[in-house]
Image (cartoon, rainbow, N blue to C red):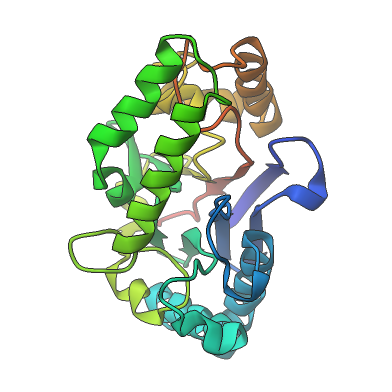
Amino acid sequence: MRFSCTCITESKDGKPEHNEDCFGFLGDTYWVLDGATSPLGMKIVHGLTAKWYVSELSRAIARAVLRAHDAPLREILRSAIRDVSRKMGRGQLQMRAYSPSATVVMVRLADTHLEYVVLGDSYLLINTPRSVMCVCDDRIRTVNPARRAQALEILRNGAGFEDERFVSLKLQLVEEEHALRNRPGGYWIASADPSAADEAYVGQLAYTELSSDPELLLSTDGFVRGYTTYDIFHSWGELLMDVRDHGPAHVLAKVRQVELADPGGLRFPRMSRTDDATAVYLRIEKRLGV
């Protein structure tokens, strides 16, 4: 089986040293990670950062793939989270402290099928004969949607991202999310608890179920804002087509243009002015007879 791969990752301020996203690949396994920015005003375990966490988790995933290439992706993710958890040490047990975390989307391109695992609100797009399939674990959105709506209304009224009311509501929401992280009734994300991998969305698809030239897009939420938040695209199919025809850098440039034109979130209210953005685009040439 032959395939092509195009990748991009960019920090929200254009400085690579500030990028809390990352991507990686080893053999037939690919992954994208989105680190959760440490909120201002919250105590951080040992001062560990989201950038540190995604870097360590990416390396741990690679080691887990090398150790047990044929293991289910859920097991590989669980093993990787466990490895990083050990490095975090006793600080991870300080429940009042905020430990770094990350969303995860992984795929494995086997000979006859692809396997995937998604944990947290990053995205996997797969084209099928009927439509573009989207896999995203967005359970974090169920945490106090009323408070989120209230914060966005402040932006809609023209106050801007620096408004004290918006900043206060955002911090309250982050604290509420932290209290429900990796707990039943809340949401699940890679952090200190390896059992979060057991709650990930997993699946596999035979290549015969996909379009004649299968395409996949693994991305963080900052990359797909052109559809989820802005009006650049009107369907997942439009977004994937633009990536295919012009490349992920072209798509991301459109997102950045909108963000620059709407610096206060008046036209497109959102929880952050801009965001780190990462995408891995894969196009598969199926073997004859597969």
